[in-house]
Image: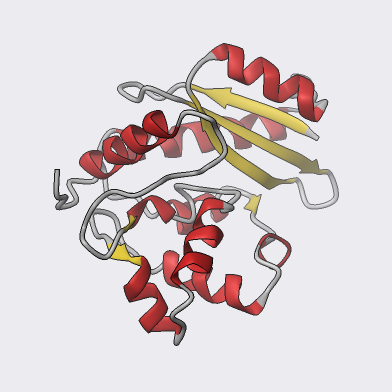
Length: 193
């Protein structure tokens, strides 16, 4: 497994990608996307998961990664980019059936990708849409989302309109909540601040 990271202008986080290059299809299989607050966290992630850096001799792999970074730069400039659709157009496979293994999780995923740039929903509304009142399980599915931003779980708020959590992978939940607020502000979503 390999990694790639970059820091979009204006964002107080690094985008960190864990992927495998698929030689047979000349594409990337994106395994995980996370946002990390500093280079120290990036180094910990690389060591913990024993990842290798980009193969600089593979021009196709490098071109795909440059296109991914350009796509995210466009998003972080405030343009209404549908990352889920657009990333797949640049030879990035998401392998969604293996990421969302249960039927319940896949239904939540399908609801998440329907939330457009600048829009928000709630765990309650997702539950109503998929016919479930297991709001905590919906929240857990969002928290365990391996590719946030691409599957926009940051657009899900509490029923009362408060921000709620985001990612749930780091120990600093205040930083994660502020990051979620920053993303929603970038998308010009209406929030209860």
